[in-house]
Image 1 (cartoon, helix red, strand yellow):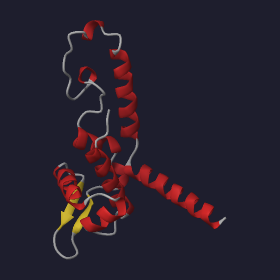
Image 2 (spheres, one colour):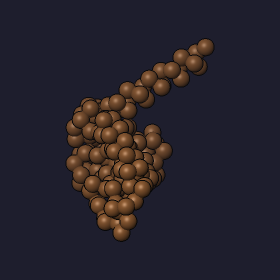
Image 3 (cartoon, rainbow, N blue to C red):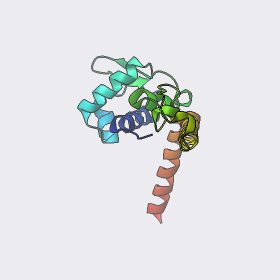
Image 4 (spheres, rainbow, N blue to C red):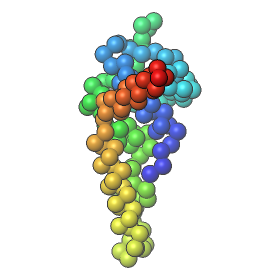
Length: 149
């Protein structure tokens, strides 16, 4: 699996919305600045996430985007799949977009690619944006404590 810039930015945008969950719509400008994502690119990403049902939007002066569900109910794998497609490193081991290979029945590498796919998918499916948010808060707390010393 290779995470595209779009997948990375989508993950960061979702994290920013997780940070602000329950505080109402977040303007694109705020997400863009907080996560260092170019605003025009972010608009495209948020539209894809909205179509996929992970975010909702509100128009107007107090408008913006917000998560459609709590951060604990959205795993990272879902968002990566929306942005980048299957998590498999090659198509012959993809669950979603399997493509037969002429060497498939006798390939010594297939088991390795399948294991890689399974490990990546399992980790990303088990990690919610709430988990990522908790990790970020812990890292920020530790950084603050180091600065105080």
